[in-house]
Image (cartoon, rainbow, N blue to C red; front, side):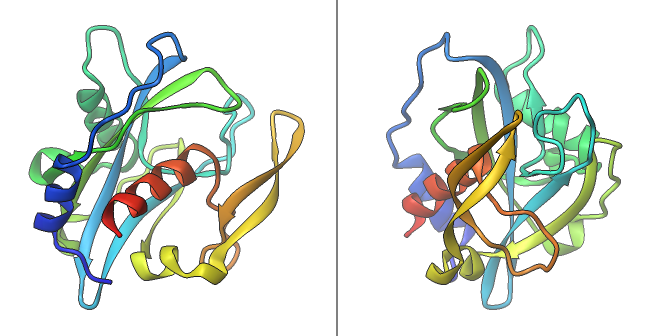
Length: 190
């Protein structure tokens, strides 16, 4: 399935945003970044660097982080994206946002903002918080055989979670908050 930035923007604008309770955790914001490729749409993911103090160490994510005091969530997503991967979203096309979600295992409330870029606009400069950056095609994310239940470790617990097995060898499963945001996006678009 090939979607255009116009159709994505229209579908995002047409959804009713749902918000978790305001007291559902520390506010954070992420950027889902899309690019059009011949025959497919690709979505940018980061693999978080291994850090003992990071509960999401080594997991897949969208660029983003904590909303600072006096900052709007969209500003935080754009600032964090620049800090983590060197991409200025001021040059990207803003397509819309997803409903906020609350963390299942940690007290965090995540806002997700969706942007479109052209492939030649990305020259990543990774911060020490990011171990890798890569693109995954929408067709791969939609492939039924990639949707599994996986056992993951989080906060010294083993969890059975819905996940997507990515086509890149050696990459962790897509699960947790990023998986939930990805599934929300796919549901709106399909």
